[in-house]
Structures are given as structure tokens and as C-alpha cells.
Amino acid sequence: MFAKRLSIEKFSATDGTLLYGLLAMPGHGRPRTALLHVHGLTGSFYGSTAVEELSVAVTRQGIAFFSIETRGSYSIKEFTKRKGAKETDFIAGGALEKFEDCAYDIEGAVRFLVHHGFKRVILEGHSTGCQKAVYYSATQMNRAVKALVLLAPVDDTNFDRAKFGRKYDSVIRKARLLAGSGRYALMPIGKDPYTVVGASRLLSTADPKNVEARTLNYSLRPMGYIARIRVPILAVFGTDDSYMAVAGIDPKFAIERLRENCPRAVDSLIINGTDHGFTGKRRLLARKVAEWASEHS
Image (tube, rainbow, N blue to C red; front, side):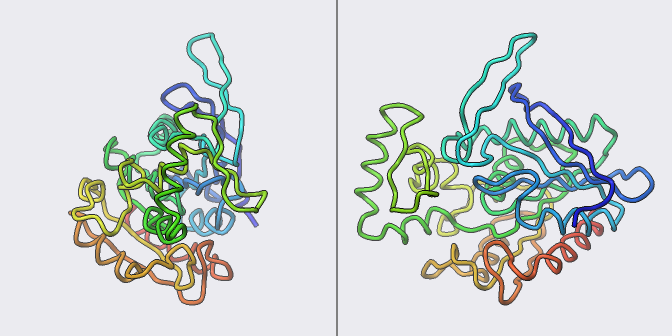
């Protein structure tokens, strides 16, 4: 069940890409703080993990909740970019997006909120949304963003290395070869028909030379992007997150690394018996996030 006061809003990324978002408002009054939710890879603004539960719990605390579409929504999707009176279409989606473009999407959403009277923004991401929230916060430093919430901030780079195992080097070589043929080249991975990823998108997380691969790489010393964060952080993990199944990198280790590198306070929560999507514990997750957001609003 979503919060009752809902509206679909249209906003523009700062490069002109037109996007949508779900805005939930408290039952009464005009809040000064909004929690901005960034979905994970191939997610959506209305179907992201815990978005329903968060909309209810956050608005009960007197905070608005804005869940946004990004150009990483779904696997492959057509988007429209507007420049003046001219509109052009382009293809992106989770399989083809360029990671660094997330800064345009998030900054556009923050500006939308500020334009509509919100004074404080708490930026929250799930899964790949965590990398995007960290990268944005480290590079843009918009003063309206006062805190950061990371839900399942997994280390994609070390997970990819563990997943591919002995095939890792050959996968990277093949991906680089395909990526050189154009940005729309798809990488054949496994037999699952739902696994669709562009070669460049795979390299974005799997190749440690890339920005996304360095954003939440817990084995890096130092973690350069985390070191640039100037706002408090809440990091939430599930004990059964399969994406944390990497030798030596468990939630406790990840939290230690975040605290070692971030110059501001890092609060943490480990929820027992739940997975990457917080299955079965989403109401608990939403309540804890809403309470923390209220303390930082």
C-alpha cells in the first residue's frame, strides 16, 4: 500500500532528459524535507524495493517521499531529451546506461524538489542506487542534500570478480572488444533470458578502472568517493544478501570500511534473515529509515 497523497511528477535531468517520479506527501501540512529515492539497476520509480513501504513510513514522519525514474530504469528503454524546442530520442535503460550520467538525473530531481519549496533533501538509494547516490554526493555536493541513506550498498566489482572466477579475465577482454564496436553492443552472459547487459555496462562494474567500479569497492584503500562525502550516512544491509557473498567482504567489514573513509558519521543497521531486496522485512526497513530521516530532517 502506498501513501494516500500521491502524484506523478515530470522533471528534467540537467542534460535535458525527461523523467518521471512518484511524489508522496504527508496527510497534512507542507513539509520542508523530502527523501529522494533512487532505484537499483533496471528498477523503476514505482516498483523499486520497499518503495511502497517507504512512502508510508516516511510521510508518517512528516517528510515527503520522491521516488524517481532514472535512465537506468528497466533493461532497455527509450528516453526523450529536450534542448530548447528540440526533442530527440535515445536508448538507455539498465543494460545500456552510462553510469556517470546518473548525476544529471539526481541533480535534476534535487532541483525539482528545491523549486517546489523543499529546503532539505535526504538522498537514498537501493543497490546500484547506492553507487549513484555516493557518486552524485561526492561530485556535485549540492547543499540541499543533508544526509545519505544506502540500502544494500554492495560491492559490485568484487562480486563480479567472484562470480566470473577463472573466466574473469576472458570476460573482461570480450567485453572490451564488444564495447569497441559501439555503445549498444550486448554482452552474452549465461542462459537466463532476463539477463541483458551491454558490454560497456558490464565493464562499468566489473573493470576496476571505471568510476562505478571504484565508487563502492570495499577493498580499495582509500575509498576515494566515500572520502568526499560531507553528510551523515545510514548504511543498511541484510544478512542473507547474495550479492555480499564475497570472501572477506561481509556487512560488518563494509560498515567498518565506510566508517574508516567517510569524514562524517556513519550509522548502520544489519537486518537479520533478509536478502538484497529486504524480503519479509521491508516494513521494518522503512520504519527504521523513516526514523533516521526524521532525526536528520
